[in-house]
Image 1 (cartoon, rainbow, N blue to C red):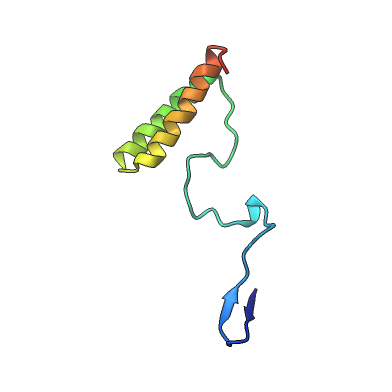
Image 2 (spheres, rainbow, N blue to C red):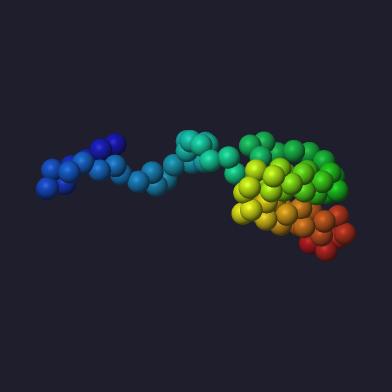
Length: 81
């Protein structure tokens, strides 16, 4: 949706109120699109593998995020959550 202001310049309105499914998934992100079933140990291994992939691709922020998810599932598996 585009609108013009008194100066005649056009601008787009922000997409407030849109649900996640309506927003374009152009940014990869760490979170999987679907929920994966498995034990806490399996999920921990999956997140550690994703962290290693992110590290190899040079994305340190993504790698750290994945390691934090892995730590969460480590704590879940130990009953410390």
